[in-house]
Structure formats: C-alpha cells, structure tokens
Image 1 (cartoon, rainbow, N blue to C red):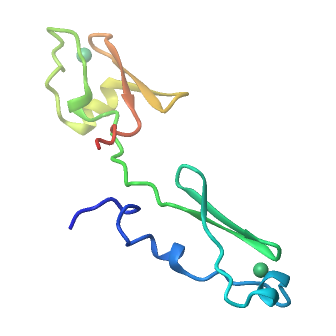
Image 2 (image 1 turned 135 degrees about the vertical axis):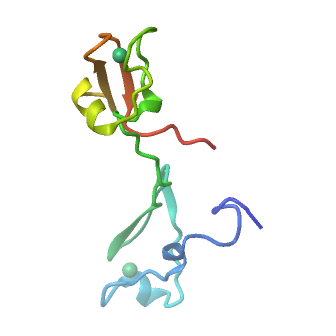
Length: 127
Ligand SMILES: [Zn+2]
Ligand SMILES: [Zn+2]
C-alpha cells in the first residue's frame, strides 16, 4: 500500500519512541505513564516538551536531484551556435562560464554564441 507517511499508521520511527525524561522529572513522578504528544511547530519539524527537557524531530527532506550547470540538456544556445549540440564535458567546461548566483541557481554563459541561461541547483521535485 502506497500511502502518505503521516496518514498511514506508519509514522517515522523516531516519533514512536518514548520520551526519555530526566531523572527526577516532576511530570513523570506525578504520572509514570505520561505520554508526551508531538506537535508540528512548522512543516516537517516536530517537537515535544516536558518540564525536564525537550526533543526535536526533523522529517528528512525528500532527496532532490542536483543539476549540473554543464549538462548539455540544460543549455539554451542561440540558434546557429556551433556548440549547441556539444556534449563533450571537457569542451563544455572550457566553453561555458558558470557563475554561482544568490537564489539557488547558476548563471551559465556560452563563450561562443554569448547566450546566457539559468540552471537551478536542484531539479524541481514533482509531486
Ligand atoms: Zn519529563
Ligand atoms: Zn553557444
């Protein structure tokens, strides 16, 4: 059964582990069977708090596909650029000027046709 992690009963294993109270915790002393509830304070970040301490859990991010600015598939050369179909990594490394930009992308410029294009660091995750 393919179900969303949080809708199914199969929560991430760390969320099923009992909270480890500090020695002499007042809450635990008053109610030895106490179960602390997790609350999701922000997307993917859970926490539970006791008088004796707190615990955080971050849901691991889905693996993202890292893009390569030199990948020929990301190129946007001008029509007629003699390197528009070049795929030789050694050649592309010399031909393309890659500049890292704020905002999670590279600015790639072709040394032959002078076209420039953006390549995001990561492919958009679909789903
Ligand atoms: Zn406690
Ligand atoms: Zn070009």
